[in-house]
Length: 221
Image (cartoon, rainbow, N blue to C red):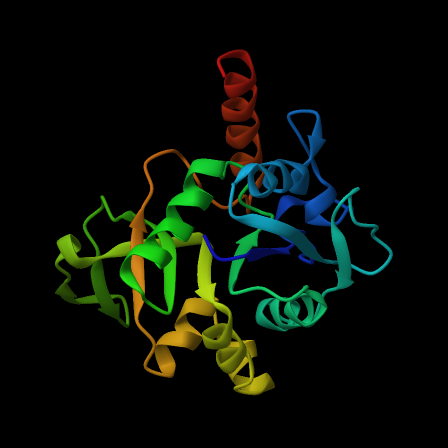
């Protein structure tokens, strides 16, 4: 398998958690939130290095290359990519998703190899009925069979991600995920279905649920 580096986006402040600490350092099941993602990335066979974009004054964990995060998410990804050693592929993962597993990471890398696409991204089929609305009125009901909730990790061929991150600060600031930047340049992005929980920790309720799941995994590996 070609060489891959992992970029861990961990510069968020986490105001919605209601805590003073940076989100990446918030305790979850006895460890900082980002530690769970570092373990999963390092356990994947294809990952050679982990580079973390961190808040000012926060040191990277042992074995992780640390860089200062940017004003927006994609700015942090760009800063981490600049600091990353040479590689064929790049994985991008949000530290706010501590339930990621090495299997999910490897599945994204395997899909990138198998399909020859520009990117392969973790995603979950949408289970709820989704309606488009305007002014508080339903406009239409969308066909959920074609809808996916996008997650991380997202695996990229490095040249495709580098081109996407060169679009400029305005485009980077508006992007909610890096795959959207690749899509905007005509890149092919493949969906990799995830089955274990892999949600983003945003609220205190999310943090509590993630802690319960992680403690259960520790008891039943």
